[in-house]
Image 1: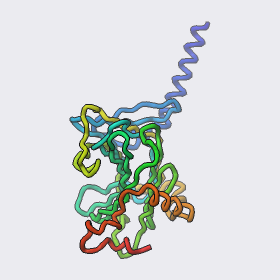
Image 2 (image 1 turned 135 degrees about the vertical axis):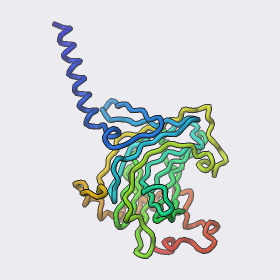
Image 3 (image 1 turned 90 degrees about the vertical axis):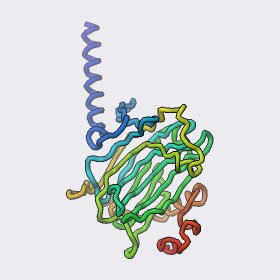
Image 4 (image 1 turned 135 degrees about the horizontal axis):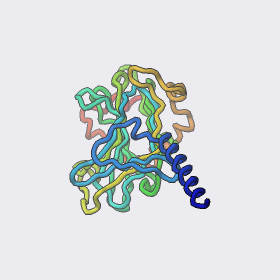
Length: 278
């Protein structure tokens, strides 16, 4: 009788875990994968996608659908220890063409003890070079943190753990991502030529494979050629309020490493037009 009860209990637990896993299988349902991408479930039943980088290749996943505006969010746990030369990404892109649009959150690896740099950037009609970079104020490898992109017809908002750190405004006479549907991507790759101290510190392959974990993906977005998800009003007209502009100023004052609007050497013919507008 005891064995039968134990078997029934084990069967019930298996069914419960299967139901939880099925309900949260965001990677399998919404994305295609490249390279070595492993999956598991944490104690709460959330699916975890783990991207591996070694000498042979990087890894990534990209959405099966394309979007035109939306709010996209994911939790990430980055590479512990020496991650110099690696780049971990969460971004939207319309493709690789000369006139492509793109919205980036790129995490640039570091030598042990150095801050991880978050690079945010916007490309419109092939026009990029609009980076704001921040030193993260926590250890992004010690636990999961939430990173969010809100993209609407008015502005692009970047958030870390719910805090707005940047808002890229739209101006009627300047390029802005507004017409090209974009695919959502997460990637881990070798950026030794660029990522750490402008390429001075490459990847130390003795630490490979490098692993970045993703979980808790959510998207409230408009599918290209289809309808917008329920609740889109929450982000479609979203602009930072006064408190959120306060967190932008806090991030800029305390953690900003680079602002393209301060880089006159890079723009000898004059800074981009949006830099002189409020």
